[in-house]
Length: 234
Ligand SMILES: [Zn+2]
Image (cartoon, rainbow, N blue to C red; front, side, top):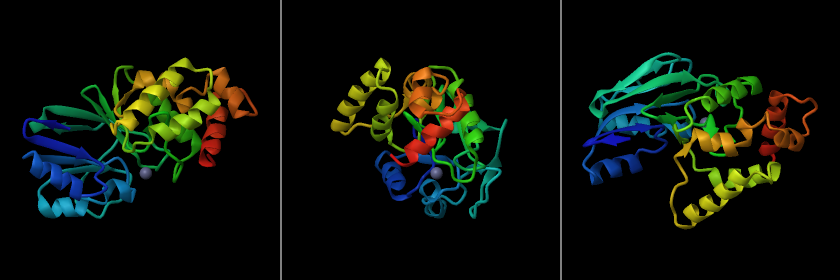
């Protein structure tokens, strides 16, 4: 994210592309926001801190980090004054136990909790935690822009279409995503409205998803567990 010459970044797995764009666009880096402890989200931080020793880094309070940082958790706010942005921190355990997301300025930086048409795998959390975390995100305002950390949309849609072949919104999204990827454009950000319409992991109360999941009981959480397991083998 940027305003004027100021920039902040989320989950820098590598320093090189960040340093390149800062130099190319003459930007000052003001802060790093971290959603969780996996290497592909923090790998670039030591090198960025070498380049900018006083740079504020915000990272989840419930996880351990070797670099200096400000720990944040549920209910905290992060003020990025040079960018005139304020984010609320929400804890969304499931992918990892300490995972946080940053919500503000009509935007959600959701790390590996929510992907477009998908969600993160379980590492140290439980199905129930991830389900509850996704439900909280699903209830943010529909127009919220969703910035996931990974561009997995096209592959996720292939899985979603198998579960939900009659879903017209999903069929249209598939076409749009194909065009965007063919033109080497990102599919992100998505929106909460689109994810509610298309993402099977947010639609576990829908009879189509429950039937496709072959869940033993008609309950959204059971369908969620079933489709998360199906996705692992997809
Ligand atoms: Zn991760």
